[in-house]
Image (cartoon, rainbow, N blue to C red):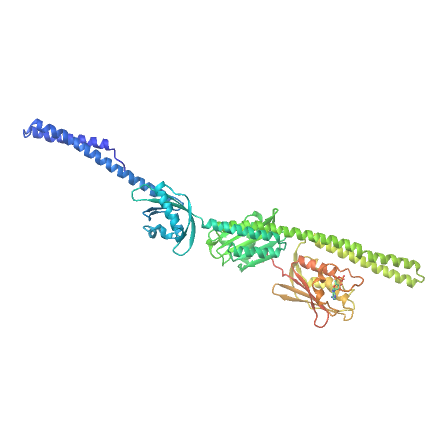
Length: 566
Ligand code: ADP
């Protein structure tokens, strides 16, 4: 509707009425029905009153029109606003926008005409009412916080401000802000900060992963979680902790996962697969998946993944929280790594000092004393005996140095992995020891093919175990070697009928320099080398009793897998 200009319209009406009256009256005068004076007065009065009536009418009409237009503009503004706004008239909802209906959890039609205070928590009603009166008397109120209670019982915390609207059938305009999400986020962040401070205190990777899963489960509220840690070359998964995470079901899915990991590794950015966009990266049972890299000092340590059956369930705020957490977790993991490395270095330093100081000194002393004896010896036979002792001490020194070098190598080098068949390695180890095993009954029960992803140094572990079995079972000269297919690995065992290992020694027999019986030719490094080698293969080593007397040493190694992630 356009506003009409009263003066212009009134003048047109005036002119028209003047002409019309003039025309009619001139006819009347011509017919001599009226005298001139009788004509003059209506001729003046009629157009004048027509002018006045039109003018006043239009004035009134226009002022009403302006009010309606203003009101429409106002309503449009409210409706298009993205913040929640409601206009009330005598406490009842007159105008409401989409954002407000979302906060109150009710449709616009159902909301219209309702008393707004119905949605406010009883305890806050007074406060809100006071804010209305303040707005009506002063124009606007201060901001107050109040709780909205939805029909479902759900509560939302809002920050509310009321202002007066000066249209006849309006009263108060309420604009508000939903603080629920922000508060929730703030609480979660505080919680996560508290927990991650705890995380940084831990120096055990395993513990860090477990704690992280707990945080994600209880604070960020996700249930399908996977933490994968990779080795230095990003090739090998060295640690995997998961909670309800969907397993890759087929090769296709595994290939896809591998692609995703490579993508994350290359971009060093989180990866978010939701149904619309990255459907090809999702497992059958997933609708959304979010993977954050764990990075420290620009190094890729691994990933944290969460998976959801509902696409809507990994919103931006959750993703941000997870990213914040992953930063903390990365630092903790990195620290744990550094400290472990430092500990190992110190251990190694102590070990070398003690080898040089004690273990090398002993054979040296014996060499020196035997060579003195040679000089003193009267017969050739005596001299030969002494020289044999020197030979044996020299061999002991050699063995010590060899072992020390192997350990140092294992400690410092990052080793490459390849496809290795355990059957072959075990065969080679037995062959290599054939001289020592001459008088022994060696039963090798390993047949077929047992593939692991490993390095050739694993042979040293078998050699040391078989050598020990030979060394420590001088009475019953029998050794059995076999392999068992376990659910998640192969267990190689070396069985002997020797003295066995007492229970209290079983735990620490694999740590450096743990010795059961002091004997010559014992470096005490053999089992440490076994342990370290097996550790490098993510395996386990332990000892059990042979029920027939003696011991069974067992090494468990993960099976070969052609994939980056299992
Ligand atoms: P070393 O044999 O050089 O002393 P190891 O680390 O190989 O060092 O072994 C540590 C100790 O464990 C040995 O001193 C020995 O007492 C005990 N041990 C190892 N293997 C056996 C075995 N097969 N039977 C009995 N005792 C063993």
